[in-house]
Image (cartoon, rainbow, N blue to C red; front, side, top):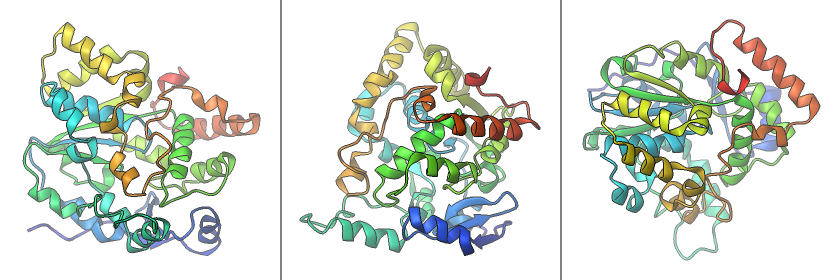
Length: 337
């Protein structure tokens, strides 16, 4: 029997803050969670206690991150290493089906379902028929080993997580995250962000995007980086030296890999090949009308691309914001060294 207790308070976002959000993210309702004020869609309330208390198994593997930090890249890397480089299954079974996105069902609220149906009235069948999203409780029915993806911070996951199972956490330069998250917010029809990037950046640094605050999220994982069941990666490490990073993941998972296998896996994971890989590009979501069909879920895969989107004012603002949030920690991004 799963405990239904949840130690953090959940508060609605209201007043002028909510009014401003509604101008850009129409129809959504938001909440703040716990002392760090994690910002989430209101559907999270329904599953918060279950996720916090969910039964774990020793052979579970979690891939965790703040959104748009290299999650999909890391998922494919981890799954292939853990499954003895089974490229055939990886090609024929989408990443969405190989991993259980722990909180995904909590974001598919009735309001969002209605919006999807309304926006896809010209289709011959219900666009949600091919996109059944199981509730978090259904993780209990999954065969072992389970591969689970989450964007929740460590404090909202089971307290015994690292004592029971392995977690690979991936982090990325927040400026690149913001650019990628902006494009994702426009890509997802359920969010359909209506503003420009500069306005989005304003929401981002004010911790008014889902799963924010960004730095609290990273710091929680960073503080646990030396736990034997935690592997903390940087996106920039994957981008700059993929072979070395792949070997680190293999060692963490207790997997042997030859030089030839390493070369083949790095080729499979190269951004050029990854962008062409239909198994990781969320085609089910496109077919269901949840994603815009004419854009790729995997974008440029580039470190430092934020410079193409930031003006001088935003660059200065980012420098101050990052310095302030890093002053009490030894966390440093490879891109800033």
